[in-house]
Image: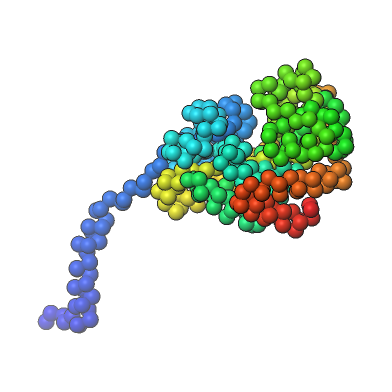
Length: 348
């Protein structure tokens, strides 16, 4: 006698039979290919420099983290456009993104400068990074850049700059009469406050100007960046650790390109940028310390300003920040936010 199937068993058998063709169809259907993005970013760093090498590492890391779904071709300074045209090239879609700097777009809004280098403010990159990540800086930056058609992914620090000098400068009073190359802005204004004579020269003329005595000192880069250019051969002193300037570059993306990215790739690019900022200043810090340990061997005398002199410089700088910030409501918000943070950490 054939075995009877219960009603519940019959229902299960029928459901399984109905599901089998559907499962087979899903298994046979190929997985939907994930979209890939191939971008080009130009940097302000020159080909062959250690900064360019670190930028190339950043681009490679994005490709690795995304499994090749987002690739960035790293382009050296001037590869497509000049440094002053780079931001507009990103905003207009000629470039997908940039590793540029606020100083190159100061004519749009002085807030870019106040964000990228609040002259005389910090002692170490991690202090400004803390303000940026946790003190409201990131939100202000993204609002500023969005107003000019781009998405601000993050800031990248290369460290506190040192001042190569032909004369010994031990404090603010000894800045009097010093002819120093300094870009127009907060640093040149501060130098004038202390009786110095700022000179606006292109970077290509700095070495020969020091050599010929046209300059006594220069605002340029970190200790190792300055030695890489041979400044110690024409300027026997270096103010180190630095205090006057700690500029940050940026990672910025065309707004339409950013909006087209899936959320996971946006997160990958954001985290990779944060790591880029850490790697840039830490690798240059190690290079700076190596130079400092062997300074005497290359004929370089390091001058470390005491805390009291650094504080005099910073307090004078705070007045200049407010003067410059008066030009722009966004600059005022950025300066006020950083000033509050500097007070919280005891630097003002």
